[in-house]
Length: 257
Image 1: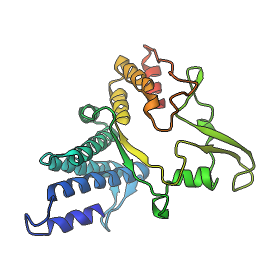
Image 2: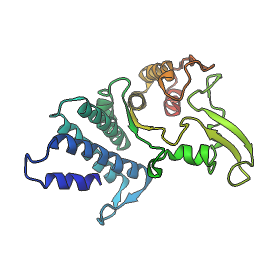
Image 3: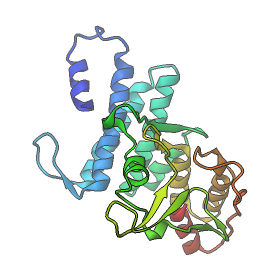
Image 4: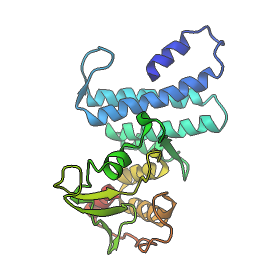
């Protein structure tokens, strides 16, 4: 859809579309995420009836769209243009990291301002826009939570970033599974973040490792109550700090965070 709209807008006579640079920049940012999420999900793809392309080639398509978004929005002022530029910076950092370009990922991630969040906006009144995590796991109980995510700890305390409720054995839709529900999203209209400052910081940590990564982990832990699903009075807060000089342990902890 984004590609189609870009073509339609560019098909009009120059200067005849209001806010053309902003609209195309915004569309390129969304197109970048469409390619990227598909590329992260599938090993091989084809677009619009074209030839099969690899995952790496799809990441290159994503990076190109993000670059077009960043460059195009550079000539536009205002809060909306800044929002979509930051959204594209997180996306391009991620596509570069997926391609093994750590230095490029860090360069973009460092430009993302503290507190930035881009949301996929859900709507409880329109089924196509329901929050599917809440719908399938918490409301319909068609899915439960994998044991790997139950009882997670930060040091010796419960991880408040994974709010779960144990419903009971055999009460899910299949009548067999041990049913747990999630409370990261608590209604059909709960928005879902997909590009954030926190993600950008963790990409920097993944690339740079060492004490830079330790510092990022602890800074994010210190601000965990900023997350909307974490209660500011949770018994586990403040979270314990992480300390290590072991490269393998730091790498593993970055991935865990």
